[in-house]
Length: 513
Image (tube, rainbow, N blue to C red):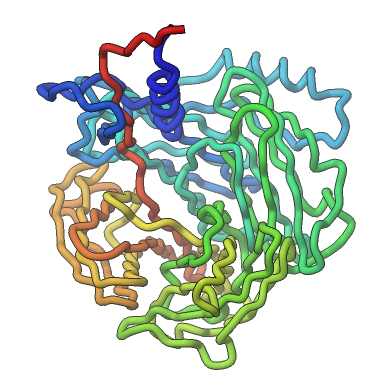
């Protein structure tokens, strides 16, 4: 029989490659046979992205921008496609089972009649755009292949000028997964928070939604076994899953079968609405980058999913260094309970980032966290959310930047670092430009990013780590509407354009029985 260890190695490579798509498992061109146990980093050849249904308002206008950075080979592929297609229309999730099969059949029929792509990207290095309007716009399901797959990103930006949920709502479309954490949600009477679930696959997915408040789990049977039909989406109003109102709630989405894209659309009576994306995986130290300089209110929400309580030290990483905010030195987070802290106007006119770390060395307890950030006062308040995010890594990209209104925040929580920032060609024309930034240890550098020469349309920003320690990044996009500075913040984790694939000998050994 074939070597068990070799087969296991190949299986592990396939599973790893499936995180964002499929990586080439063949030997790199011109290379020699790799020794078993070594690894090769290869470009992904297929990537999936999911954009949630943009809104519940007839007054909404949504812009989509898709982009793949130049320089990705896409393995051995010389061509590729990258399209965002309409899913079946999102449905309100039912709390009983009697009509789930009917919805599944209807959604399958709608998928079979899908229209032409909302966005179709033709080449790396130049964004492609699309638009949608109204409350009936469905979620989008996207796939990129070949040379368009490595680093493919898409941005969904919705403007709602007035009424319920007004605001500038931005989200970097998400990769499908099976496990998501969303601190900073709420079931308070002033809030209307929906979990949006989108299924990219040809078979139904089944998801569970768990809620955790300040006193622990908010028990609910109706959050279990939610069917997300094939190629479709559902939205769930989280306040219908529990009878308890809580200002700070952590939402945990998992799947029993299949995979989904998940995001929370949070709306407040006074401060408007925006998307809350998933926190980075639970970790002992987390970074939340990109708090605007003029933030008038910042609320920190954290959750400890393990069996141990977490005692966290709080550091504000500003322009000149790291400081401990007076009166907000530590946060105690009990196991399976959501903790919140009002940091008020913590930045005091200087952009910064927040870092949470163990209060005692050697006693790291994994946590997830997010910030609720408000700008403006009175009836001109506007809200955005910043989840804990992973470092830029080799490369990260955010799309839909305009000639004005973008701010890029770069944070080096440990060692000093150097990054290269590239502004792509515009969607309608323009020449790319690049600029290098040095970030001192323990600081945040907030800059107006470079703009392509002769820009027409929108453009993408790509951040690449050149040297030094890890860098965390976020982009703030601002648009003034009816005298309100509406804004949204997108964090920039590694684009996972490459995958580490363990190599095995081509001639698998045969073992004796």
